[in-house]
Image (cartoon, protein in one colour):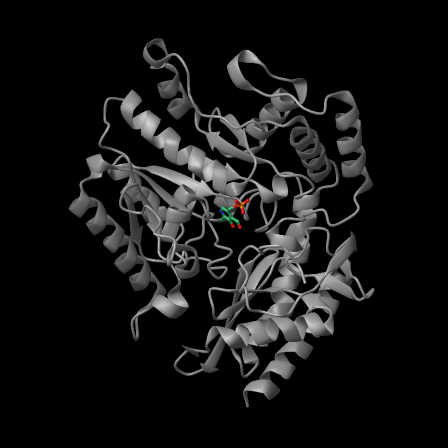
Length: 442
Ligand code: PLP
């Protein structure tokens, strides 16, 4: 009997894995059983478990300065160094960085920054945010309203209208296409819908368009070629910012440094970072703001005096020290280049699963992928979510941890340090899980 209220869990579900320790790409339960961590925890443990350099960086920082804050003119060397490092890495001009503790609170920060910006630039009406159906951007009251997955919205009465959040199409061709529609026609239709929404609401009421370059929790959707180019053209025409949520894509996940690079998204105004920023050894997030947007926030200071937003743990020294060491390791060990190669290998090994009777689509880029489970390959008809749940348990039984996403798909997102031999092990275990699921549904 436990007294924990578990997050994102069916309170009546009985399955539990008690994870006791981790090493490299593996974790071990309380019976000593080994699992290949095929989802890098929650899409985050890029350098795997037990990395001694990260442990040493954390230990040294605890001894040097266990806590300091960043309010009212205080700072510390690790926070300044980390901001410099992120600024050097991100494809955002003259970036300035606000630190938080999670992807959700980093997205909340942006909702507030967009409102502050609207007021500061004398256009207080220009504050609505366009997000996409099925998008996932966190679960706090505000970030939860940006999220479009039903489980995160229904029953919580998220303040969607109060925050001026609008929704547009999800760019999933396999599920969203009309009969006979080409990829190009699909893109033109959904980008056309985006522009119609902007015109109907009035461009002068819309501040930003929010998207994960390649989505994670909404099913690992890689939009068709040309999608982001056309979206950016519409946004530029109507003076609407591109807000890239790189919480999962950031830092080598998609075969490049950032998802924006992979998907040709240029110089976004805002970029959310978390998870792999510290390889999830400690919680830290970053809200990255393009220089020109930041400059506009500075001016109203003469009137308001203080930018009244910040967390006790904004820029916590432990998070900053571990994140700095993580970014140093990424660079020194060419982790992104190596992950691009193993990522191509993962995609090659997964492609043949499209022939499996239960799989309608295999999709992904770099070291992130998903299998769409279908009951009818011809129509693409999906199963109820219990089937993705069954597959998840069957894979765990075989020693592989993955995650059901969007009800009908099974996601994989292993640590960036995974080797080709470990990918072979992953796909063998996946095949075992899929065959057990096939036997179950037939
Ligand atoms: N944005 C994206 C794209 C995410 O995948 C997540 C979490 O999975 C979040 C935001 C929220 O991050 P957190 O769980 O750290 O609050």
